[in-house]
Length: 79
Image (cartoon, rainbow, N blue to C red):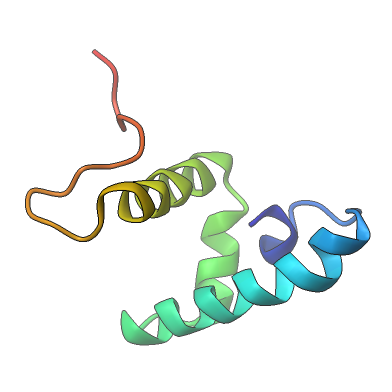
């Protein structure tokens, strides 16, 4: 996500040529489905907190599926 957002420029061949286009495709389609522009999503993902939050949501969906109540991959707030 750092490469997609422009927060990082250098990466290995696999990350820059295989993973980055896949992440970009998913982010573009996700942004479109929520009615957001790709530029806004890239701007938000430049913040590390947003990237960690999105990663936690995606990890929760991958591990537990889409269910109700939603179970994230990690807690958003530890009290």
